[in-house]
Length: 127
Image (cartoon, rainbow, N blue to C red; front, side, top):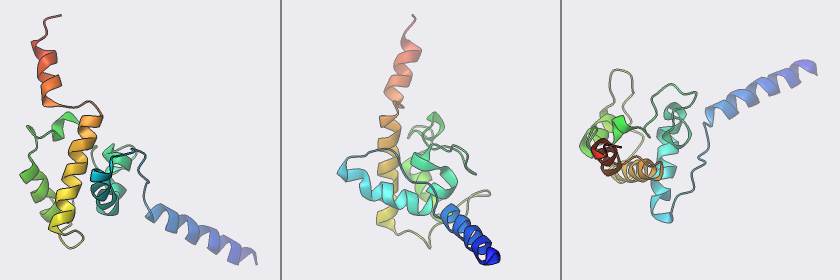
């Protein structure tokens, strides 16, 4: 009986770890499809809400991934075809889901206060 309990506990922990992280950011309805798609294919590596905490991949809510540093076209290419460190996701998402993921990421960046205009205003402000 102890072996069955142990096997159950081990298999349950593997199952739960495979489920990934759950989003905590509450988003308007127009971004929910992107949030869902992100967590389906990206969340396990990039972390909950793309914050990268305790994850294998970088946080995407970061100045490095703002549109002026990493364009939507580059995001599409990265998602679909991957890179040296990131596997291609083209067999896991369709074009509509990729578009929704990008909308969600851009919204999340703004919600975190990351915008090109706020960054340039800080640089222009001599105080």
